[in-house]
Image (cartoon, rainbow, N blue to C red; front, side, top):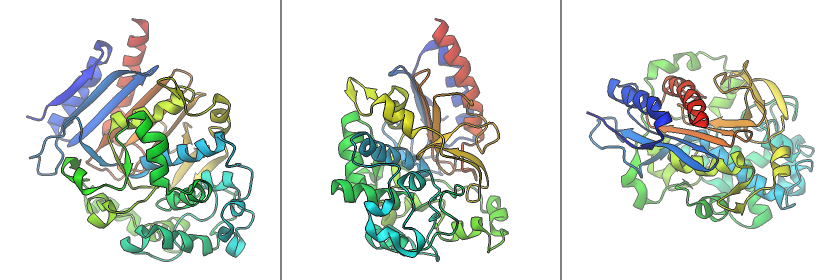
Amino acid sequence: MAEVHGSCDTAFDSVRDLFQQRIVDGPEVGASLCVNIDGKSVLDLWGGYADAEKTKPWDKNTITGIWSCTKIPTSLAAYLLIDRGLLDVNEKVAGYWPEFAANGKENVTVSQLLSHSSGVFAFDTPTTLEEMQDVEKSTQRLAQQAPWIAPGSQSAYQLTCHGHLVGALVQRITGKPLAQFIADEIAKPLGADFQIGLPEKDWSRTADVISFPPEAAAGLRNLDPTSLAARGFAGSLMIPTIHNEPVFRKSENGAIGGFSNARALVRIGDIVSLDGSVDGKQYLRPQTLDEVTRERVRGPDPCLMGNVRFALGFGLPWTDSILPIVPEEDGVSFWSGWGGSLVIMDRRRRITISYVMNQMELSVTSNSNFNLYLPEIYKAIERYTKQ
């Protein structure tokens, strides 16, 4: 029988029991689930299997592809530059990246690019995996595109190219590729097991991403091909098991190319939840966090096919949005990955919650398992704070 391992405060025993049940009953194949309160780990669980055949246990150091949860450290990379006065959200992108001014993008601001309202949300023609993962050439290609919507008019989620866009700014300002900057400034100082791209030495401890059934995506195939959603998907190479491909693992993609687990993502999310300071190191000033987590755009997003509120890179809770289970409270921000992985950061209560799994569902935010875990986690938090 699949077992759950790890530790949790007694207030979270019900969460552990539910996690065990979902793994034993089968909806969950392998996963990790973590909660930090005020920088202290109160729940750190993992269990199930790292492969679809259920022959390889998911252990403490198992990692897997996290899809768009990659955008959390990518956004934090931009936040660090903003905090240091090296990147101004109100300036034009072209001021840092002159080539980006081509084809009507000369007035696109850094704020619009970070909040998914730049109008450049996918490659303008279908691309191959090899082309997308040649970051230098594909970034040049994005710089030459015309926007598909008026910049700043609405969000249109930058599915798989967000890391190219943010990475271009990071590299031009710091001289470092995005993946290296995140490793040096975020992952290594935190001791967080996160990386964009995956060296072969880590493949043996990496859980395969398991796709949802093909029939689940039938609705996507029936989209109007002229719609923004269809064009966005066509230019984003949305292959569910892309993280299992060697060419993908050997390259870098700052939008979807992260490999990690819940423990590491909680450590990274603590930068936000703990007001910029983790283990005595000040990563961001509180006033910077006030600025970057302020709402920039709200409304329907064609690529996410639902309502969303965006700050600079992160989502903000909204009961009418694509993820209504996150409480609509001040100080809360989050983002998720295709299939279900998710990180919630709560500055007011100094809480970080993260979930990472290998069995995907056809969902851009959360999944049926986490939809059960989260209410139980909040009940446990109440019990914990009353102890």
